[in-house]
Amino acid sequence: MSGPSFSNIDRWFFEYVEGNLSPEQEAQLEAFILNHPELELDLDAWKSATIEPAYYEFPNQNTLLQPDKKKRRVIPFFWGTVGTVSIALILFFLWPNNQTNKTSHQSNSINNKHSKVHHSSAQNQSFTASKTNVKNSNYSLNHSNLSGIHYQANRYSTPLSNTLLNSCVQTNIEPEDKLSLNMISINSVTENENSSSVDRLENDTLVSTADLDKTELLITVPSNTEKGTSLPKNNKIVKNKEITLLNKLEKSVNHLNEFMEKSVGLKNTRDHQVHVPGMSQIDANFSSAGDVSSTRFRSLTRAQWAGKQNQQLSTNFSLDWYSKSIRSGFAVQGKYIYYSNGVIQDWNTALVYSPKIALSRSFLIEPGIRFKMGNKMLDESKVFGINQVEIDRTNSLDFYPDGSTPIGKLLWYKDIGASLLLHSKWFYAGFQMDNLLHHRDNIYSNNISNPRKTGTHLNLYAGTDYESKSGNFAFAPYFMYDQFENRKEAWGGFNFQCKALALGGAISSKSNLALSLGLRLQKFSVTYQFDNTYSQLLGYKAISHQVGLTINSKVSRTPRRYIRLN
Image 1 (cartoon, rainbow, N blue to C red):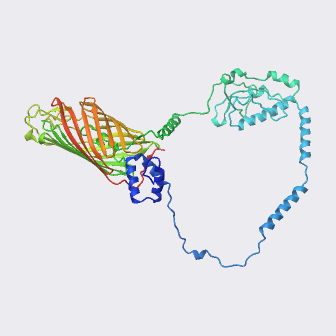
Image 2: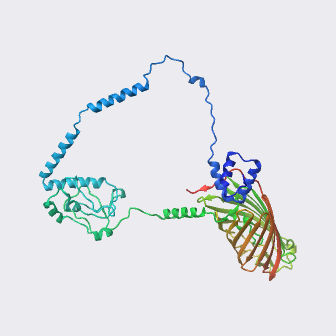
Image 3: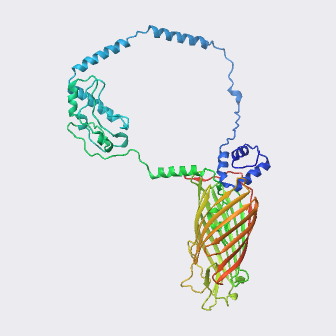
């Protein structure tokens, strides 16, 4: 059997759940799923379709045996059947046939009765029968199939005159008791009626065909209808079918799902790299925690503007995984910053929670929340001679401008952030907001009455992945907007992979440039990035370097579960 691909993936899934694959083939399939996480739903469906046989041995089976008894004589089934059929045939031929005479007698009696019945009596019979039919009916007549509605008690009664319409009153009743009439035409001239019947039709109420499409009447015949009650005119059209916004939305989602099932070469690996300086995948969007079925360890070490007065060394690591029991992803983060030979040190830890919600087969939505806590440490012996600091790019701050001595060394802080990420088979898109509590950040001065508070950090993120049929080439463009205090910057970048070799690059709206080169294997990847970014404190661009490392565990054989809204 050839290697797993989109053309034969169903066969691989079948052999996998049946246990027919060798250990080498299982590892090959797991690696393919790791590169195409959108197939996890299909694998989940295959595993849920299997049924384990249940074996149960009933104890004390000997007690079910009964002692031998004298056998009773049983009449053979064949002779019993023959006897039953014979009796049925005899009764059929010998039973007296009086049905024909009875029917003929009834027909003659009805004809004689019809010729003698008075017009008012027949009219009352017709009204009574029509009243019953209208009350017990629950259907809509289509004027494209019927030329009129004939109200008559039976085939031999005279036509219903204007009495029926005059005795109908429009009332507010439930939809199941309404008759939606597109046309009312009292036209009951039968082939057996004489000229006097035709003369009576001149007084009947008729609705012209020109008004058929403009009129729709809802009528009912109450039990206490009185003669002389007229039917209201200018009745409004009432539609029985109601199309709600929810039905329209559901129909649109179904059409979109069918469209997303088409093979266009685009996909979503849920494992993306961004080139924004100092930003890891978890930092780009918290909701990416637990996106794949393997546990991932990632680290990012950065040397920013080395040799300059605002040089900075930082390291960022994260560990994220997926929990089947609560159908959510988790991540633990840690970050350490060493600024300008240790004048300021910052470390923090964070915990991320992101439930995985399936809107449909093609769309997943992942909200996320992050709680962060840390502290900043100040070395007062290195404060003198420094007028400004720039820990975050393009956000330079005055550093004890009045020349005072710092009154503290430690600043504890805590904050939260929220994010939302949408995954489809073709693309991904999301946004996040951090520092929602605006924690205090007044380590740069002794101003206690009006302490500085950090601003909200906003990210917008979207992209897609394209992979060749052979799987040897992949191209992943993306877009990101990053806004934090004075920094407002848009990035456009790409990642290109040829087998294990990975290349990438990005450029920002501020003309900042970043390039990357790396090696990506199934369970291990390493990436080096070079970027040339602008420093507000320096007033020009400077070079920075960073190295990223990713280690993936073995893909979990337990199928993923998602929270479903329907």
